[in-house]
Length: 138
Picture 1 (cartoon, helix red, strand yellow):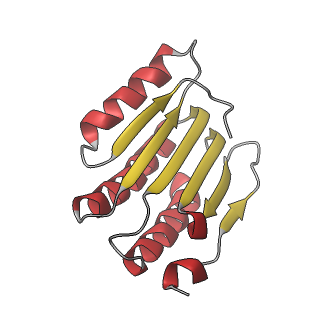
Picture 2 (cartoon, rainbow, N blue to C red; picture 1 turned 90 degrees about the vertical axis):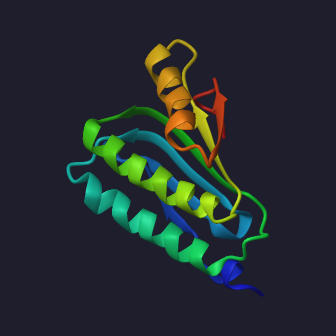
């Protein structure tokens, strides 16, 4: 067994202000789904970012791609800042040779969310950003 398979999953149920989190490290699949407007975005997101950084530090470069799936119907400005930190974390690992994919799900009727996803590919050039017009995809 490798260090990657020993990393416990992070699973958090959605609340009225935080998204569902399902970080299945063994499958290399990370999910954020729902709404993100926690009272303290840093307190919510930084432990998640740290868990991913620790896992990526321990995983080999030639591992299967890391897939971050983000299906947020709403997120506030403080969550946006932390999401950018999260994306930058993955972007940094991608620059070092780890294949990282960002699957951005958006509502087809929400031009702002779609444009936000398009901008992510410009801001985080080492990530493979995949836009998916299916907000409720699993």
